[in-house]
Amino acid sequence: MTILVTGATGNVGRHVVDQLLRAGRRVRALTRNPATAKLPEGVEVVAGDLSEPASLAPALAGVTAMHLITFDGADGTALRTGPEIVRLAEEAGVRRVTMLWSGERGPVERAVEASGLEWTALQPVEFMANALGWADSVRSEGVVREPFADVRGAVVHEADIAAVAVRALTEDGHAGAEYVLSGPEALTVAEKVGILSSALGRPIDYTELSMEQARERLLATGAAAEVVDFVIGWHADPPPSAYTVVPTVERITRRPARTFAQWAEENVEAFLLS
Ligand SMILES: NC(=O)c1ccc[n+]([C@@H]2O[C@H](COP(=O)([O-])OP(=O)(O)OC[C@H]3O[C@@H](n4cnc5c(N)ncnc54)[C@H](OP(=O)(O)O)[C@@H]3O)[C@@H](O)[C@H]2O)c1
Image 1 (cartoon, rainbow, N blue to C red):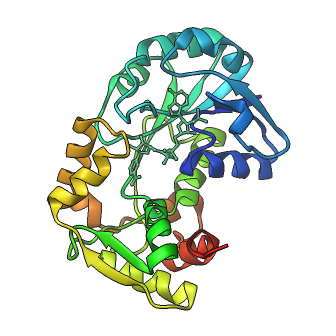
Image 2 (image 1 turned 90 degrees about the vertical axis):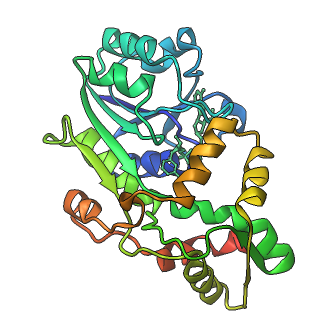
Image 3 (image 1 turned 135 degrees about the vertical axis):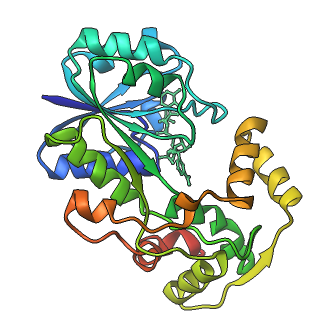
């Protein structure tokens, strides 16, 4: 019983890998670059690219369950290879799949939902890990620059997204479920900055960016314009799910959702000068 984790070097995937290992599962991790993957001992690391399905045969051999990302890291757009990935997975004997939502139902989601696989869709709101984008300016200038000062987000800890994925991959009863995942409170940027400041034990200033400045900054990361427009639009006019606290993490994992204060304590090193 091997479980394949795609996106294994990412914010969510690293937690999926760690938690499956702790649960005593046999874990295989997919990465486009095993040399830089830095995955823990006990994981079988396999090279492959979801945008090139022909490269996936070694990763899928003998796999019964799979955590699947739905976007292509090259530019953040939806993976267009959903039908091929699903066909190869079914041929390899995969039965269960968790899908990490990218904001819209794309080719991967459509292909998985139309397949005979037992699937569970994970729809997290904003990740707490997005605050890692503040690390450089906090370290060098003690400042956070973000748009949308008054907008609240029910930010969710990546370990909680992973914990729900692990339940869905290893327990019965989650097939066909679409889980919207939030954290335990809806916070503004200023509130998050305050919490981070307490964890660091020093003040952090907050400067509000205009929407255009935020757009330019995102485009400079290499994200496709359609992805940038989606992200900016989401924050400028968030749907209720973005700021609504839901009990799904606790219901599925049987433990309270992690707080942003907890996230800040765990990630304090990233914000300190070494
Ligand atoms: N950030 C948010 O607030 C938020 C909220 C809701 C949903 N999401 C969604 O969550 C996803 C991002 O998840 P994350 O933050 O955990 O990821 P991440 O930290 O951005 O890491 C990307 C991961 O995907 C893998 N990857 C990318 N393209 C690949 C490809 N073509 N083939 C194989 N592996 C590939 C990378 O593996 P290698 O580099 O090792 O190959 C890496 O492990 C996106 O779909 C995003 O839309 C994000």
